[in-house]
Image (cartoon, rainbow, N blue to C red):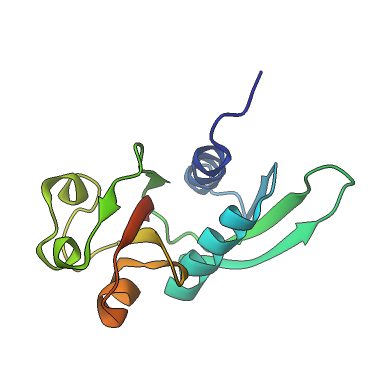
Length: 133
């Protein structure tokens, strides 16, 4: 079977392992986008350390889980978000986050992958990739 959205598979794998209360999750295939999303999640404190394992193919990522994720998932289609949209939180953003203060939206910007809080701080927009709370 063809893997059409590796980011969606990675976030679903993390969520499923978190709900089973596993200590770690193995994500495959690995990509630069998934690693950058994991860095944003790690910066916010939702996951612990992660390690890239080169297996000669596309690689694997072993993620240490901390038990802090209630829900995470991809946003499809990837909505474009302007800076002023981030300030007002449009309806499709409210659909994913339970509150303004709870959770983060992961956004791909021209300065890299970051959370919506960092994008507001830097006054830039981007494309919504996923959410975590």
